[in-house]
Length: 116
Image (cartoon, rainbow, N blue to C red; front, side, top):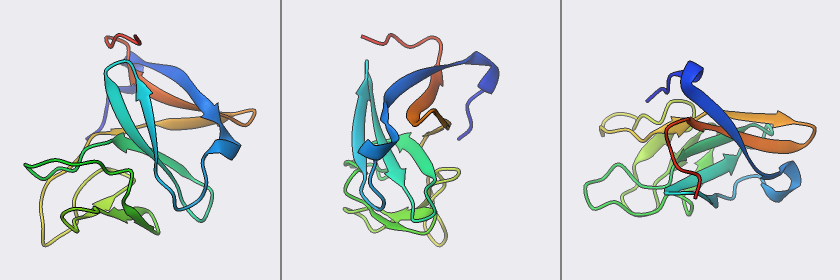
């Protein structure tokens, strides 16, 4: 799912070195729990930290494969780029834009959320 980029504010979540390749990291911002992944090519992706399965569960323990992850509980294959579950399954999770400025990682969040 895409957010309207005109209504985002970018929030610092840490130094680039804190995000290791292939390991999901939970980042909490106000009421949001995000799963941040760094791929082998150095790209960072942020998703809602909840599987799209009706029973839910965290995504931070997912296995990274290219620009996708495998859900640890339901074995759903989820694209890191757009949050869509790959066929033959269905569903999606919210994704958030990530930028890196001077080795600092920032995530774009809706301006309407409370940062706590």
